[in-house]
Amino acid sequence: MNTVLTLANEAAFLLADKPPAKGPEFGKASPIGLLVIVLLLVATFLLIRSMNKQLRKLPETFDADNPEPDQAFDDGTVAEDVPDPDAVADAAGAQTPGSAETRGAAEQVDEPGSSPDRG
Image 1: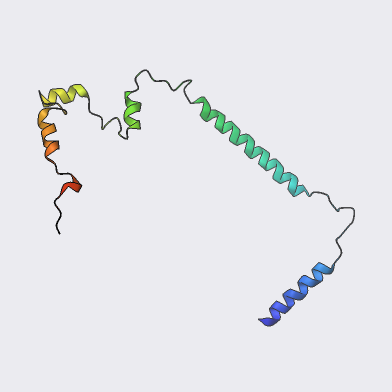
Image 2: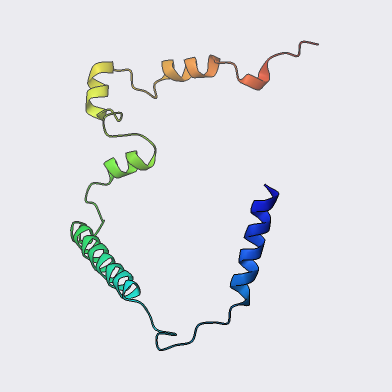
């Protein structure tokens, strides 16, 4: 193990001692660099084209004539969860979600912090 480290150390010193190569090719870019730049340009072109297609699918404005479905979505419910007010009134008859019976039942529920102390 020690000999491997010694050989690696000697190789590093030999490579570091060499003067930099200066010849006719010094400082010139390779064709691989050109290929990488061309590939990046092609990828950028394709991404911009895809983004433009997605932006064309958007409506001109986001103003809705009927904002109730959007409001239900903002409140955390989906359209299937929001009952139709007419259907609820027909099914409940005279009892509506805000009727006295439902309010009385809600008032009877104990609040979590109101239980007597158990010492």
